[in-house]
Image (cartoon, rainbow over all chains, first blue to last red; front, side, top):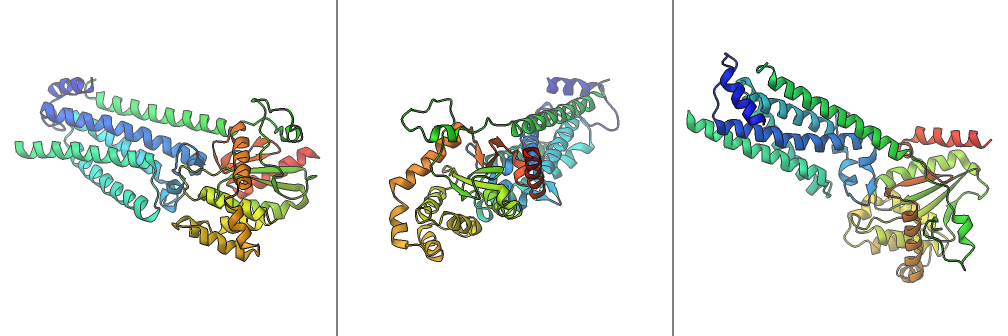
Length: 163
Length: 236
């Protein structure tokens, strides 16, 4: 639905702020926006678990306590999951604006997602070699970042070929 | 209108995300503060002829490992896993409360090794129980928690636990035999059955006079102190 709305709006809005996009680019930006929602849900859930203290607990169904009770789970006094939730929401906003043809959005989106992919690699390294324990929610978040990275790489490659 | 559309979509998602966060936080807080029914351990433990009804709380291993007098006004029953990091963090808090509240507080420890994620948890529980057979359960309990990071990373924990047995001056040969005994295995199973009957889903889980304390409360020294003081005040 968002794809049709974006394509429709794109044809009608012809201002200095927007640029023409191919249908494929609109699809890719929309896919990034949708995938980022999964990351947003994952990070929101983890943030709440962190705030209420539940994530730190060892439970029968999840083995995240080693990871989520480690010092790496907090950045400057803020839960890392909250930073992640903010990042995923920003990705969603930028991908939506990109799909609607806002010129400034794709550049910031690419930089942000690249940073998220790098952070995800760093977090996987920490889980594997420093904490020596994996958390499925964190791995899911990393997978989401990689998928977004791949989608945007394809989009970038297509845009580069068109030039 | 069309120009506003992406912003409307973004704001809608923000609203849904904030709403979900609020709902999850509320649900999580409510779940953690639900009080458990009082334990029926005393009622069932002495009646070995009648099989326990499935709805009753399992008594757990008898006698339970406890610190403090039976007449204490507050009983804290902890379900713990020696390999669980938050249990290790809770250990000094509980020790401090025990020192502060003295005779007014009794602490019971129940084994609840989460074997799926902690490969040495059963070995550690067995070591504590084997030490308990020589009357040194709490000494081993303290050593296991205080050195959790050391043995947690080891491949073979047996020599480490035997070293602890030497340190607390118990018969190491008997300790080595007892650690694999049916008696020790049965005690761990009995505690596990009690955990299950009380719907314990994780560690550490602490019951204060039969009511489950919220996890954030037990992990916060001042919050736990307040809860204990309030219980004492209510008992007066």
